Structures are given as structure tokens and as C-alpha cells.
Amino acid sequence: MTGTSPRASGTRTQPAEPDWAAATEETVEHLRAMLRMNTVNPPGNEIVVARYLEQQLRAEGIETRVFESAPGRGAVVARLRGDGTRKPVILMAHMDVVGVEQDSWSVDPFAGIVKDGYVYGRGAIDDKGMLAANLETMLLLKRTLVDRGVVLARDVVFVANSDEEAGGDWGMGWLVGNHPELLEAEFAVNEGGRTRVVGGVPLYLAIQNTEKVPHVVEMHVTGSGGHASVPLLDNPLWRLGRALAAIGAHREPLELRPTTREFFGQLARVSPDATQREAMADLVSTDERRSARGADVLAAIPVFDALLRNGVSAAIVSGGIRSNVIPTSAVATLNVRTLPGAALEDVIARLRAAVDDDQVDFRVVERGEDAPPSDFESAMFRAIAEATRAVDPAMAVVPYMSTGATDSARLRQLGIQAFGILPFPMDQNDEDRMHGHDERVPVASLGFGVRVIFGAMALVSRYSS
Ligand SMILES: [Zn+2]
Image (cartoon, rainbow, N blue to C red):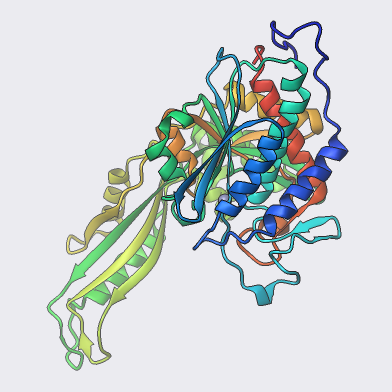
């Protein structure tokens, strides 16, 4: 971490290392305040959180704008100005949360309760934890760098959005449509990664730099139909059933992408499970047979298998109207997730061959848009990795392809290199509470996250980056 601005004046004070205990405490208080504001979407009502953020940022002297995309909905865009040597970096999070089944919670999900070293509440992980850490990062950048005379090489732009959990029309979509000029940036840091603790040890921080592309494909089958008392061989349900069975048994070919190769290559070194370590090392070897053997072992773990090939899931089956009638048609809805860069048409051609029945008609009803992967050798990725290792030198930092789709795809289509993180070390159990009951984030992990985000932003905004 070198190279403060050449314009930093000698008469001013030097940049100071933040007081991390105080910063963690402050982050917890901001998180608790925002958890108490109910932003379950729908209706969202994120404007309450937007006003809170505006107040905190402005109080610190940070240029802040609030946009009301619709009554009760809004976006916050705050900016710490650099000298424009480099293009801006966006630090984003969303203010809305998913609903709760309150009876299944052991605490009030909207009270911002701290218990046993955790902050509890809907949104603690997704995404108010990151929102609070991003806010704290802006405050610390202002206090410890800007106010001390450090000139940033690029703008750091804080973006808080609405409506992420319901498609983003009143959030990211609105901002892209109405204020694209505010989103001009080289990099963006968003939600979407993970920091995994296994057996009590923080193992790796995964930075999402690419994602699978979602599509919806239907299989249509027709037949002559008739009274169920006279069985027919061309009953469309038989035909659809055979087609579904064939697709269920079909496996898309193994395809390693640079991101997955790096991901498994690094995990092969740190995974606590010897069988998995060996399988991962096999998978990334240049020997094709060894690679296939590794993939077969890892196939037992669905979340790993999904990273290695295009995925097809049967989602809906419909057909038939009464128990004594043979229907004339039946439809199955398939959810198809292609690897970035893979062609949906190629997948459908293989499914058609597997089904081997020209009476089964495949129709694409929703087609996802592919986006180029963000570069895991870029200054932003390296800054996050370096900031992470500064806090925990033992932790691996890996690029990661998410199987789910995120707002980052929209940014990548705009030419912004977007990276998804969740820089709060958590075990699987805590992470699974996202969108579930008793969502919570460890206080210590929040502190870790603030150090990583602040460190990454400071590094990427300096001349040396
Ligand atoms: Zn989220």
C-alpha cells in the first residue's frame, strides 16, 4: 500500500489507520438502525433508509443525492471525488429485504437485536450488513484519507438501491434508465460472493466475477386425446414423461472456465476434506481423463457440479383436465442455466437428441442475456485480495462463478467490471439463514468486512493501483 497522491500537501496531516474497534461499533449501530426500518419488498418503502443514509453521509460532508424513483422508493448516490486520473469505482448495496415468517423467528426481525455476538434481523446478511459496511467505508475514507489531504485517483461512488429482491425496476433498472451518467465507472463492488468458515476456520473469500445465465425453455407435446377408458399410445403425458426421464438422465458436458479452473485450483490447496482436495486437483489438471475423474467425484456435491456444466432443472409440469380424460397436450417448463459464453441453442440441440422424439417441441420462452466475466487479474480484484490478506494472511481469495443471477450482469453489460462479495466470514449454517429465519451476522465478521471493503477501496483509489 504505497503511493499517496503527489498532490497531498506536506502541511496537512498524514492518512491515519482507522480505529477498527470503533469502526466496527459504528457499523453495528448503523446496521441496527437500518434493520429497524422495515423495507420488506413489496412494498419496499426504502426511502426511509435512503433518508437515513443521506443524513449520515451529508453530516460527514460527503456529496449525496437521493432520487425518488416512485413514491416510497428511492436510490442514494454519494460521491467522494478523486482527481479523475482513473475512472470511478462504485460501491453498491440494496436497501430492500425479503419478507419474514415472524412466528419462526426467535427474535423480532425488525428490532436490530444484538445477542451472543451476532446482530439479528431481516437483511443482516442480505444486504443491510453490506450497506452498513459500505456506509462506514465512505465515512472512513473521508475522515482518514480525504480530510487528511490524500487526493484519490478516482471517484468512489456509493450507491444504495431499491427493489433488488423484486427485479430492480424501481432500483438498478431505474438508475440505469434515468441516470446512466452516475454509473460511469471502471469497477463496481456489489453483493454476490461469500467468505466461508469451515470447522471454525475462515478458509476463503470468494469474489463473484461471472455468473450463469438463466433461461426458460418449454417442452410441448400434443396427442389425439379421448376418453380415458380407451388407452392411447399417443397420450401426451406418456410422451412428456419419457422426454423428462431422458432429460433427467442427460448430463451436459464438462466445461471448465478460467474462473472455475482458478476457483477449484485454489480450493484444492485449502479444502479441509482430503477426497475433495484430490478431486479438485484432478479436475484442474491438464490430463483430460484425470480431469473427468475429478469432475465425477465432485458431481456428488450439487453446488460444485453446477459450476462445471450447463444446468437443466425441470420446474413445472402441466397437462390434463379431468381424471377420465386423456389430454390433447402437455407442457413441461425447464429452467436452463448456461455457463457464460455457452450457446443456449447448443444445449437445446443436445436435449433434443437425448429425448429423440420429434413430436416433442422445444420453445425458448425467456432468454437470459450473457455478460462478459470481470477480469480476476484486474486492479479491483487484486485490491480486494490484498485487503483481505492484510486482515487474514492465511485466507485464500478466489474468483467465483455464481449459479444464481445478480444485478452485476446488468453492470457488466454496461462495460463495468463488477465483482460480488460478501466479506463477512460465516459458516454454512449462518449463510443459509439469508432469506430464511433468524438471519444474523457475527459482529466480528462485520468488523472484518469493513476492513476488507475500506482496504480495497483505499487501494484501488490510489495512484499505485
Ligand atoms: Zn441481496
